[in-house]
Length: 246
Image 1: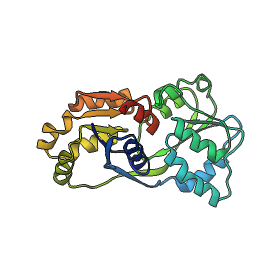
Image 2 (image 1 turned 135 degrees about the horizontal axis):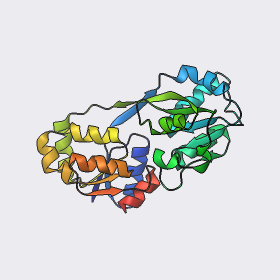
Image 3 (image 1 turned 135 degrees about the vertical axis):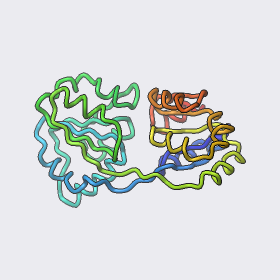
Image 4 (image 1 turned 120 degrees about the vertical axis):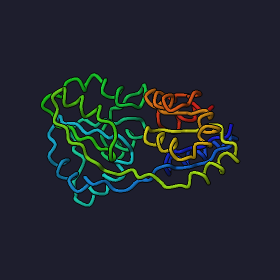
């Protein structure tokens, strides 16, 4: 099994290093990179305007890494009397480290579907909710909170940008290295991966690889694109991906 990890740095590099330490052959092909989001200037005002009982949701650790310096520069502190929630363990840890507050997160699986099922989130009517995330993304969390009576502010803390590669060159590189397993953690990256390579590489090699994805939703998208051998990890963090790869 030779593994190609498509998640961005530094997580992708960390996963490759851990796989190699276990004796597996692994390589990194990060498909996206990050930059500051357009909504960072209004973040301090939104955080300062929260009242006791309001809610903050972090959908990625990258949202916290871009939000924290802005709050530091404007002397705005994470409020102590609001509820903090995250999409997964690693993001929860980042939010807890930044805010020094308890953070709720779905233990079963790191998805919006599971997060919104936390019992405490059934009673959000009249509350404000800040959703800290990247550009684009799914609207399930925001839509559900609005339906339950919350006032939702989506804050783009960072932007994901696709990295540019020459598909023909990359196709030859990874076929020569006999890649048989692909790791993909978002629908955006799945689409980029599918579109990157020429038809001959896609049909003769790419779609025949085993695909390790981070959710059942991604598995469905992958099947629709033509993959047949798909493994669903129990989360998007590197520990969950390693369990799926063993």
